Image (cartoon, rainbow, N blue to C red; front, side):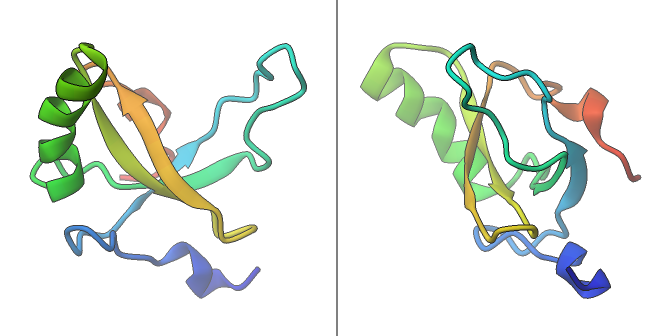
Length: 95
């Protein structure tokens, strides 16, 4: 992995993504994150995050949203569900 692989912008809003410590817990079935650190978009104005509030409620009748993640280690990307705007922020490993 190159040093520049940790310098990535969110494809949904262009904000610099932050390093985030992935949860090391497995989910009982051997599944979990395949890396210790991922990049996550914490921009509260990100279109994915903003639209996620209505989308989750409309489709699942749950209050929450999603934040975009990217794993430089294997190129995997997707969304992390959040219940409020401060969720996941405690595990940011850079300012």
